[in-house]
Length: 258
Ligand code: PEP
Image (cartoon, rainbow, N blue to C red):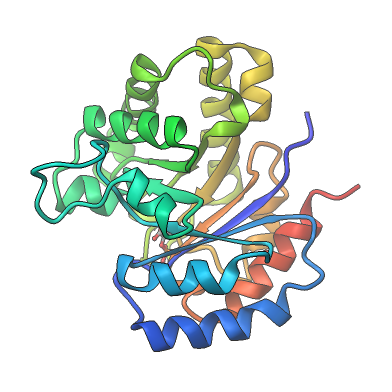
């Protein structure tokens, strides 16, 4: 099944509102010919209102990097799905390894967030991936498959494959410059698609976009995008400059045509 490529920027805890504005102003003219890819920019909450406003009626979807699965109430410091929708967000990163490792998010919390995002009509990009120690000790697939199975323990049968995106992000490759080889990226994303098929069938698995994340940059995006089960990228460092993110978007847009 043909899946539409997706290139996603994760700014992490970077950029003031003025910097965000300047970035979107620079990005928009550079992606005019990138009609072959979906584009998402995951920005800090403080910049989300402005980025959503600026990207309305453009090919860019403004997204949050996190949210909480309850809609309102005594959850000091949290932001809910209705709040994100209210300011025009269309997508959200769920279970980034920095949320899991630094803020203690469990598989169960990540699953609840993924389910709530889907039911709210926000596209969740659910991140999974192993540490260096887990990979070296042969535990990569146990970790990644466990993270994915937890989502499907909660996600309703009515969900379709287009409603959710997974990002395979080996933790050892995030922000390190140490990219997985294209073969490693294919091995993991292919296994993930196999698991999706096992739990929800071929049509569902064929429709889910699986991104690779971990030191993607203009120099390596081509060989990563060329892998059969890699449908795009989730990019931190190389997404911080509009010029370099635009190169990645254009590469994704051209990668799967023909
Ligand atoms: C990320 O933040 O999800 C990421 C993959 O970062 P980087 O591209 O910097 O490795």
